[in-house]
Image 1: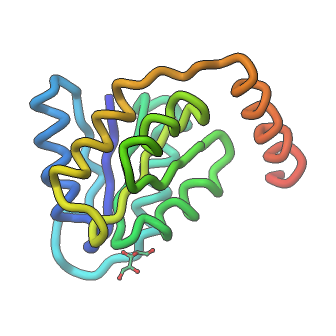
Image 2: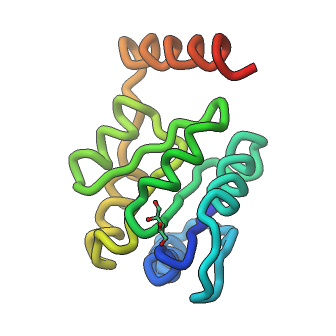
Length: 148
Ligand code: RB5
């Protein structure tokens, strides 16, 4: 299961990515928003991030206008590794090196084809573990120290 959420700035891309994911055979949960009305991105970032952390979805995708607000929001939740990416190399590295469990995109930054390419690169990549796992362990230690 992949959960996907956006604010109004990411709605168009969310709709396109939802179709792309379903065409690729993924089960998709849509966390909203589902209208053009202005909403607050932290509400949707929280919903997607908490669902991933609680095991309700394996992975999440978040989209706002730039992706910046969603990435700031999602990375507040301990255990989330949300990666804001703008090219295919970053999307692949987000999984191979960072094991990102949430991919973040900018709806006002990317066209639909590019966004699908980024999501595909992230989904098709595999975490390499090893030295990258020990770096993630250091991030977990920071969460333990600062996120009480
Ligand atoms: C909403 O106008 C916009 O601020 C939001 O989509 C996002 O870009 C924030 O980081």
